[in-house]
Length: 395
Image (cartoon, rainbow, N blue to C red; front, side, top):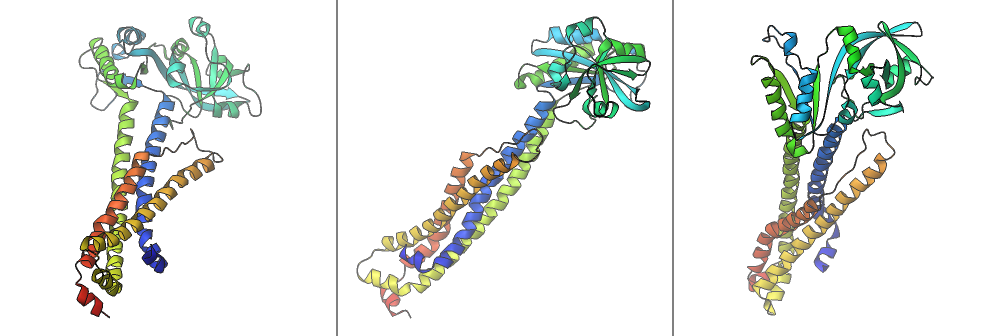
């Protein structure tokens, strides 16, 4: 300790590399866990454990008939014949025009079956969602997307008012929004009108489902449910008909793989910082051995053993790396708490929680201390092997 106090600045600068390296290890794992948790929360906000299917339209697809479309009976078959499915719903959307206040806006008219709200978990901002009576009696009621409600009824409450969609007039019973924006990748657009499914037949003349949604009871059953939905659709239609059956788990798996790759790269950077700090420890300790050659000679002359000299310099290296690791880990723990407090005052969609992996904290401390032992051993061994007579004569 006295030797380290005598060269405070040198010890502090040597320690700095360990501080950076150990803090990087903890922060890299924290960032990876935060990103993974945030992405998972965003995907689950779209709808948890979802399987979705649609008729595939491609340049190679030919002679698609009405019989190839997904029907309401297909929806019932999926809902009742797959034990892992707890809810199923379907949608059909067409492009229409809304007339309000003497102006016309292009909108997406989305017909939905019962169960759509439970699967997609839409946020009802005003009014209410469809009830069973709206579906059974085919009421001319609708829900407007948030942007459309503000556009068609600026400064007013749209609930209870009428809106003209194409040739029909609907009564607005609610305003909705997606909990997480899908940026037009689902049937819901910026300007959308939700209506009971049967009303779409008035515009299209057909009663088929464009997108079928099925919700599995548990995340681990999503792959099995995806496979079973595909089997049911193919068994109920022509063998040549192709359906696109996907689930959100594949997106989540992709996000996890990307997160893992980035974590590995950043961990390699952190380990490189520790390697550089270890080389710094070794260089400084070698300089310290040279400067204290006479001290070592005196200690050996009065009976100090090689092991005691070895342990003395090894302990100094451990103190430098251990103290640096403790400071670095402390900084890495404080930063997430600071950011979490700051995020509360920022408009972060979906919220943000920053988990700290205590395994990474322990690992960073152990690895940093091991770096001190590894790179401090050579200087310590060099000091222990000095000859007492040569050390006493050293100037």
